[in-house]
Length: 338
Ligand code: UD1
Image 1 (cartoon, rainbow, N blue to C red):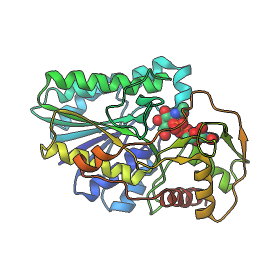
Image 2 (cartoon, rainbow, N blue to C red):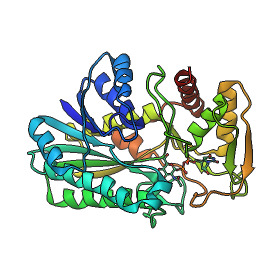
Image 3 (spheres, helix red, strand yellow):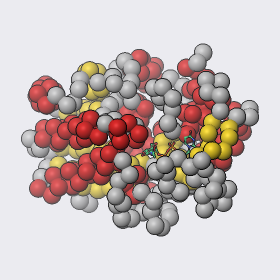
Image 4 (cartoon, rainbow, N blue to C red):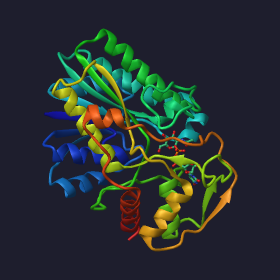
């Protein structure tokens, strides 16, 4: 039961490695450490008591990818996280994003196509829906024109997998469209490690809470929502990690209805930016310094998942509340600043 997790030392990847090991899978991690650290391995082992095999590798090197699959011919499934994810940077460096996020996907699928049977989980995003016309967002909501090269790589990535599955019966794939992953492992041994100034809301909040940043800027309070701030579906990263294990088991057990399936992974509950701030103040028992500023370009107003398909077909459900997730993020922030 050997599973390859690419990008397995990253934020979501590391939490998935833990859940896989907890379920008895043997894990091999490939990571190029471009946005992660080898120390994450120690955190994983401290939680599970198990050692993952780690290979530092850049998946853009096709020869190395081929060589890896020759050496690990017993890989039963692949969960593919390795990708660049900064929206702003993708606008500045589109070719880097297309190369990094798409070439690596193609090389892995080429190797999987040589196997008698293979199982593949793709890390996609609710960003493919853009501003959906109807909420909550179901998997059949139309895909909107991507706002950034990053978002486009998720759309094209899904297309590549869909087209490949059409002609390869031995390839079974699931794309998981994540809403907004936040939080950290409850042990505070692994979590999010943003490099530089965080672009995402929750790490910016916790860094402001700890005194690393002066003030959080809330991007706009004149949106057509109840309190005027944008609404997102914040999901605890451990719940998200468990969805990957459920998806992988579905494929391994042959329970999938078609060889390419898509699931939304969210809580189904939308929270506004001000609600997130209030919840953070509640769990951290301190006031957060913030001010309302202008809107951020490219932000959508509101997005939250219809989770019916994931709940009923995948047999998975998000269990943690927003407060649970924020408390774990806060405990992690305090731990890494010790
Ligand atoms: C962002 C990415 C999305 C990616 C997701 C991963 C953009 C435009 N989109 O989504 O492609 O899949 O992260 O989690 O970057 N906010 C503030 N102040 C801040 C930071 C954020 O008010 O300093 C607000 C934003 O306006 C937004 C909400 O917080 O309403 C969430 O923002 P963020 O965490 O960046 O996530 P998304 O924009 O949803």
